[in-house]
View 1: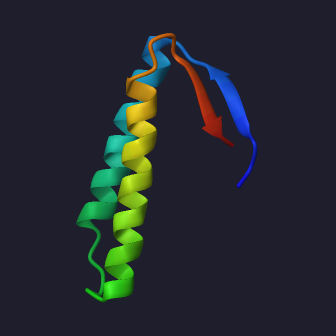
View 2: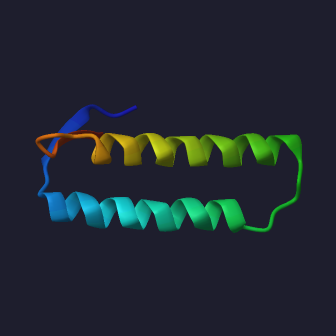
View 3: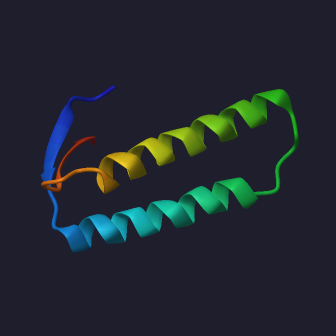
Length: 69
């Protein structure tokens, strides 16, 4: 994993990122795949990672976000 990077984002920039992440999350959820246990595990991990990032962006009071780049 890479070292965390500090990003100074405005409220509007965070809102744009969260909207984009919602789109990506829905895309992963709606993607047609083989229903194998491995695939479901990968999908679940991807959705969880996106949700965690969305939470970090949405809950940052100063909009100073630490993110892995």
